Image 1 (tube, helix red, strand yellow):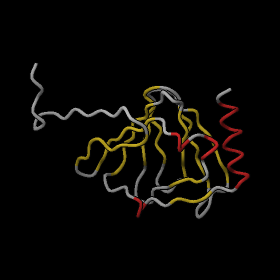
Image 2 (image 1 turned 120 degrees about the horizontal axis):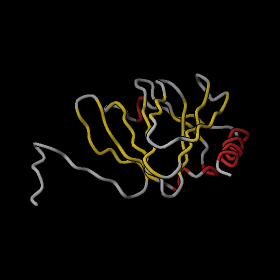
Image 3 (image 1 turned 135 degrees about the vertical axis):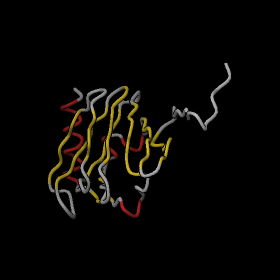
Image 4 (image 1 turned 180 degrees about the vertical axis):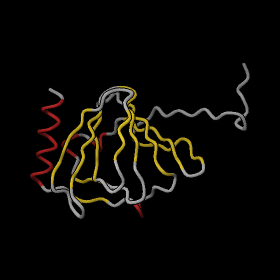
Length: 142
């Protein structure tokens, strides 16, 4: 069967590691993020926030923990949410966050198309907060 023209429908996939934007349309973007060794719990040493948009995560396969940080200019408290498949997790604009994945994880991400480094700063975690990320992971993923 001959594929449809992309003027009718786009079909995209991503099977490699890390984050890849797949479809941009007007003001929004859909991306997939898969396991990446950069985001194992022992390597999470910072969080990011988006100052112009919320960001939606949907666990499609495997396991993913969303780490949420309270605070304005720095992270003052770390929370961990063990995502459930097919639920929508909307991280609000201006909220610090990071994540870790099981090796088979696939996460769908919906965000504003203009979400870039310039409006998505990072902040470092303290050594104590990095230990807390490890402890939270070990508690949730016994």
